Amino acid sequence: MRTATSPAGAPADLRLVDGSTVAVIGGGPAGSFFSYFLLQMASRAGLALDVDLYEPRDFLQPAPHGCNMCGGIVSESLVQHLAMEGITLPPSVVQRGIDSYVLHTDVGSVRIDLPLHEMRIGAVYRGAGPRDVTERRWESFDQHLLDRALTCGAKHIPARVEDVGWQNGRPLLTVRGGAARTYDLVAVASGVNSPTLKVLEQLQVGYRRPTLTKTLIREYRLGERAISDTLGPSMHVFLLNLPRLEFAALIPKGDYVTMCLLGEEIDSALGDAFARTPEVRAVMPLGWQASERSCQCLPHINIKGVDKPYADRLLFIGDCGITRLYKDGIGAAYRTAKAAARAAVFGGISEAAFRRHYWPVCRTIASDNVLGKLTFVFTQRVQRSRLLRRAVVRAVQAEQHVAGGQRRLSGILWDMFSGSAPYRDIFTRMLHPGLLCRLAWSVAASVGPSHAARLVREA
Amino acid sequence: MSPGALGKVYHDGEVIVRQGDVGDALFVIQEGRLEILSERQGKELRIRIAGKDELVGEMAVFEREVRSATVRALGEARVLTLDRKNFLRRINEDPSLAFRMVETMSRRVRELSAEIVRLKAALGERGVE
Image (cartoon, rainbow over all chains, first blue to last red; front, side, top):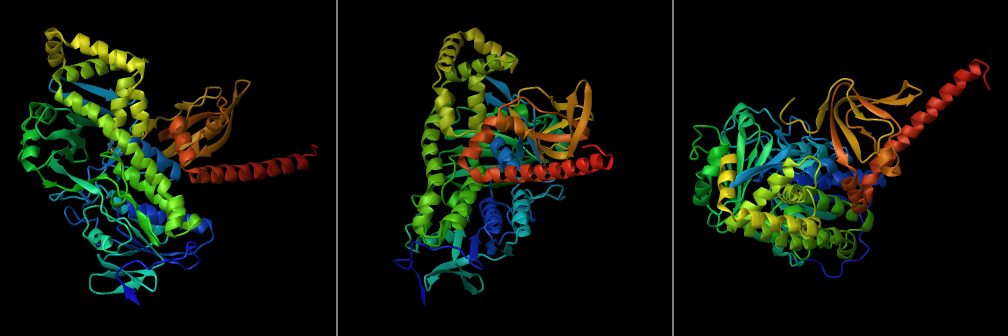
């Protein structure tokens, strides 16, 4: 019997068994990681599972058909975690390795180098690249992960799930065209920009879509040589006192540069205003025109995760469940997907099992985001105060010039911009007395007008 | 080097870790090969060659002891460094990550056992007890 809402009183000891069927809605990183780890762990546990991965997009197509609308940064910590898992990211997928950040303000710029001088952050395209890409020189990141999942035995179904209901206590998926199938477990990894989430809210299993905000992602085609000569292997982060702008970055890729903006009521006009600033012009090649963009999108991102990313036979992973605030969304997809797979294989697939085995990882990310909000208050204060901007640039410059010295502020900014460390860790380091003293000294030293003139000259 | 190559490139003969150094990192080979050498009384003995995707240098990280061998690039090799702190924190969060390490170490124990059997057999043929 087909019903629209969840069956009441499902047994608490629901488990995956040999031959169980699993559907994964969404073939982005969360869906592919989940399928990969689920099949890997099931194999170790001696279970043969039948995994269908529903993904209508073709990641081999340029935007918008194959794009998952994302800045495309694989963080330093995620690169390491994937390497530990045996998942290496080849140069055919990573368009540019990043070894440093350059912080730009109106009072100067400062480069923050990684102590190891190693390419440890990957700039990728989730799909095949921007709308006007003509030559496929790099592989799609999402396709690379999807291929891994398929190699493990997942089956790709290139169709959009249009309806989710219940039949005899099991989730029933209906795809475009009308074909329907029941599953023992459904993992939803559809991101936050998918209409499927509205359908899932109507299942009455306690799922409510996350709180969202809009971002702006824009692509500029500059050519590989021009990017190497100007932006280089650095991510460029801007703390500019521009109305409505909270955070902006330029990420060098292969032939393109990705511009990412976060802010209030973000729109194309804010993107244009940012692109016209002297700080952006200073890092782009001579003759670059801000109006000559390749493509642009205004996707939503999750800024407050859901309260209950699970129900009997249902899991919500990645962005549609809980993710990290502003940074390292792909890293959060990896962590939640792996935790969900572990819970499903070893803990069970009931709501109680997910609460016990999956929710703790989600809760850790959610609590960390609370401290993340506090750390971003710091950058907002810096952004709004010229004096603080001067002090921060001065303090970081001083740290970078002393070989082998303590680089507390540089490390904090690095981890904030790269998303490489938990916010709890960053927040704790922000309260270090040594750092507070250095900042206080920098503020005092930055009051003089001669300092500002020197910084501008140096920049 | 391709602009998208992660890690660091070591040239032929370049040392990645030296026997006796304190180990605070381990390494994953992204491309190329590394040779693991034991230095004794001024002489080098090659223990094994490690290839793409292999982890090296994990023993010093787990045991908190100095490096037991020198690791050197055999031809050009690209290597990603994993921080000890990050590595141990992640294993603490997700113990299943250690599974790959156990698999690697188990395979090495198996290889070493086979090597001992081979050496003992060779010594036996020469009449050495």
